[in-house]
Structures are given as C-alpha cells and as structure tokens.
Image (cartoon, rainbow, N blue to C red; front, side, top):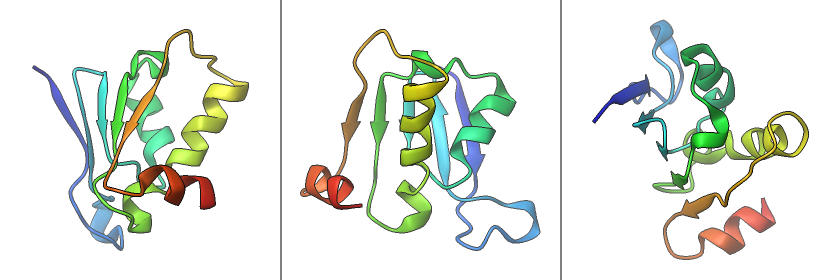
Length: 98
C-alpha cells in the first residue's frame, strides 16, 4: 500500500502546509482541496486511474477541488471507466447545488 499525503490539515495553507488530502495506491483519493489537481499532476498520478473519491465533510478545503478535477476529465483527460464519489449523507445534492 502506498499513501501519498498531499497536505497536512492546515485550512489556511500557512508555512507551505496545504489542505488535508491523501491518495492511496493512486486509486483512492481522500478529500479534494482546491490545490488537488496541480498536486496530483506534480506527483505524476495517472488521473484516469483514480477509482473512488471520498469526501469527508463539506468544508471548502475538503471538496472545492472536485469541480476542477471533473473539468479535467471533461476536457483534458477523458475517463474510460466510472468514477465513484463517496461522502456523508446528502453528498449528491450538496455537490449538485455547489
């Protein structure tokens, strides 16, 4: 199992510590901070290999990067398989409203 930490839980990104997020085995993304897409690209993660995104809660520093990732999939890196998004109750409605 390989875990890559993309941030260490600092809501204000002070002192170079970005928002909390990590990816496991290049397939399981936990939270989507605003800086997710450039961080994944910097690590060389194959974006179309991500299978599941877990959203822990609805604070902006945990999900605001998701629209940018979805736009990437629409215009730059087309997906060939399903992407699953897992979150707390009401996640689907919350994200549609957002």
